[in-house]
Length: 168
Image (cartoon, rainbow, N blue to C red; front, top):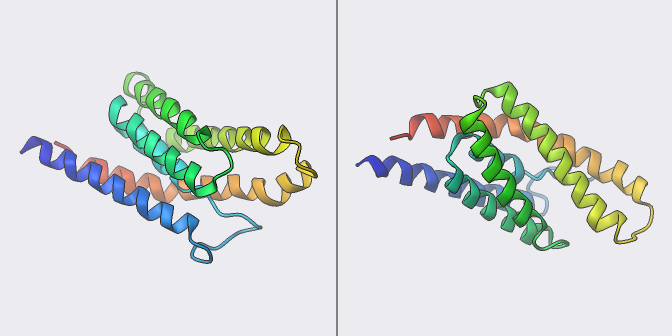
């Protein structure tokens, strides 16, 4: 009986990731603000890792990274590798050092999302030698960063509700 709630919580997280993948990859389903869509899977897996233990957080980071890599297709493996490691580390850090309060989660998610999106831009746009990097960054990536961080508010409350109400 004790594992029943855990199974349903993990099932709810999995369905959430699938729904977010559909939302962010289907054309004209999610509105684009200033030329870009948010990476909603990124704050979702980060929020899950703040609340769950290391192993589930790592697997949800792996699944979310695979979805981001398949959805954007440029750098297969970038988000998979980074989110697996980051989610594992965040889960361990929040279990031992911090409480997953709203302000802590928002601050960490803002920093990590910005760093990952900037690293992706640097590796797959600037270092790849594509032209007009600054213009492309201003027109597409700044709005993507802000939009992704804004989605974190909704995803924090959703995942917090799932974690608190479906615990053993």
